[in-house]
Image 1: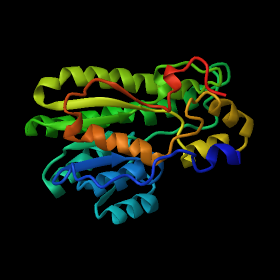
Image 2: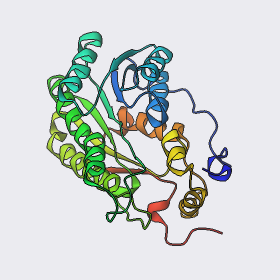
Image 3: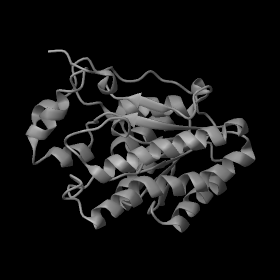
Image 4: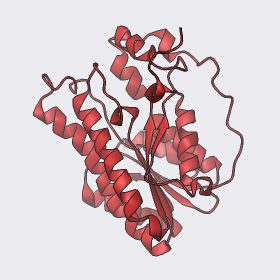
Length: 272
């Protein structure tokens, strides 16, 4: 990716103020070893949560858990038994499952136009990005129902509500599925004290985005021009939204598409 999109953002906020909204609560984060997941681990821990870090990458996941003073559970989020074991470990270790940030996802280069994306690539992205969220919700919700409270935050994307000519067809479809599923679960379990929201970030300066655009700076620049704020998001900014949705500050927010997109979804013509 070119230096311009990846550069520190002009006008980006300073370090987040210290909040302690999650003291005594247990938060499970998938895809915890890098990007938005790692930023969320740090933010949730800073707010007092006991964080359970799930990742398929043992080294990265362990490092995140050690930094947060939490628990690491190596997890393939496409494996139902491993997902069940993850949430069971969280409950057995800390006594509750209060927050589930179902965040793991992939965006491989062979997911492109519908005309060129093979069936294997389609299925792989659907399994990691959508089926995993289904599995995590199915595993987390019984604990939350017994408690009579809980917050589920599922990572969708701004592409769930918009179309793009630079297509990643399976990624886009998977995130649309996450949004629709989150909306339905948010409605279904609302009167049991459980909130479910779909987090919809715009492009975020993470290793995933850098890898996607590393060989195509022109493609990165083409996307950047559509962001009214004129920059990609910082992972910490998205993590702040996760912490809000996890906390009681968002007690009347459920079944929502929570946009953190720099204004993309509201734009027709961007500033010069």
